[in-house]
Image (cartoon, rainbow, N blue to C red; front, side):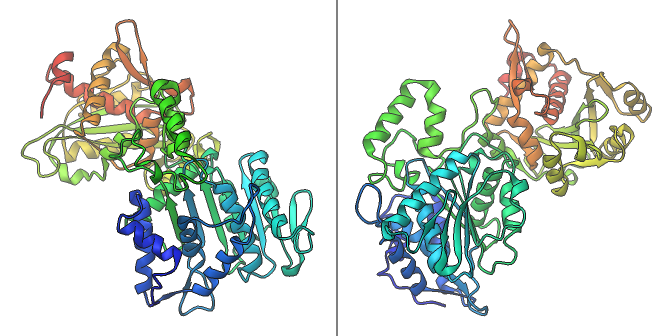
Amino acid sequence: MTEIDASKKYIKYANDVLSNNIVSGKYIKLACKRFISWFERDDVYFDYEGVDKKIRLIEKLKLQEGGNFILLPYQSFIIAHIFGWYYTDEDNLRVINNVLLLTARKSGKSVFASAIAIVAAICDNEKSPEIAFIANSAKQAGLLFKYCTRLCNSIDPNKRLFKRLRSCIRIPVCDGQIDVLSSDTSKLDGRSDSLFIQDEGHEAKTSEIWNVLKTGQGARRNALGISISTAGFNVGSEYPLYNQWEYCCGILDGTYEDDTWAAFIFQLDPDDDWTDENVWIKANPSLGTTVSYKYMRDQIRSAQQTAANEVSIKTKNLNMWCQSSDVWIPERYIIDSMEPVNIEDYTDEESFLGVDLSTVSDLTSTSILFPPNPDRKVHPDKFVFKSFMYLPETALEESTNAELYKMWKRNKQLILTQGNVVDYDYILKDQLKLYKQTYIVDVAYDVYNATQWAINATTEGLPLTPYSQSLANFNRPTKFLEMLIRQGKVVIDQNSLVKWCFANVSLKFDGNENCKPMKSGGDPNRKIDPVISMCEALGSYLNKYNFSDGEALSVKF
């Protein structure tokens, strides 16, 4: 247990956030609550002297526009949380090894990160410190290096302490250096960075860079990896920054327990009106200092007047995760609909099956639907879906989506079948298990590629009905499913593969306004199979009870 010194700027900031003296979003409040709660722990202690030393060093640096780098309260809080906590029963072993800093643009992240790099090199007690800046483009990484160089020159104009070379700064006094790295991971093997800072991670398509650099830190006792960024358009757990954000949100709200991460997520809350300037500071903690209210008012006015600007401004200036305009259903509705579905809770229930059989080496999906049932104990007033996805094992090496498939396999959200082609017999066995557990009224399936499976399934007693893949046939279930999801009347089994598939959907329309889910942009690597099988199951239900289009869309539960 460590005594709290409320006079410290960083502790005052945390207390002001918790007492609502500083307007803050949910996750900053949780970060402050977590920070303060650690003072009650016996297994960690807070190093006031080390934190204050680092803050003093930063505030000796000079900014290009003149004057010393005076940390804003939230910035001093970040320094304190990252560098302040050590384990009591270990010899100077720091608690925090990973950091996520997510703010809107123009919050001064890059300059702040450069100051952290200098601090880590000079006074973090690391032997031969190696600091690395990395981004998805050489231009962005170079920007960090430029800021770092300016800050170094501001306290060492004669270059006695910091020796600048073309792409690195050497620090002879501690046998350290600060580098700019290429995003080419093949050139990163063999590094042992004490600190690396990844900028604008929202543009990264894979976590390969982060993983390579983290792996190289194994010999470092107090290694740090810091991700600084603004939210972006790569929405989904398969994208590294979004995955980090989801995980860190889970740490802060208590879903996960992981002391190695410190997360500073400056964003609006779900119920906030993004046009209300009173909430802008939640995403812009430097508002009024590095970014002006006038600038923000101009940006928001532009977003209100021109729809084309809205998504970009929400993302860049309000740090809101956004998807491109052609996405069918915004991800927040899908996330809100998701929770684990246990088939045993629906034993002997009336159900409908949708089956989307793939080509010989691709993703295949079976979706089971349980309609509302007032006698059911679990979700009696909702449509409940659970999907089962299958893939030949060779696709883990051959598919463009191989890395994603491997992740979903590890998470038990994807079922592999042996060989290099879809094993329809294996899939049929699973469908027959559902047939024994529940009362399957109808099995809707696409006849394409399904001849032998259909013969075998019919022989086993499954009630099959061919389901036309035309836009007219998909119109009712597509529109009905969207309505149900937006109104919160659907439960979808928790599965990030299914969520990814929903994010890949855009709608195709004909001249009569009939529509059907299609792969966004026509990209064959954007899979939507469980969405199709869900629509088939729902379409089978609607057809069974002879709902017309109007009746289906006006059903009340």
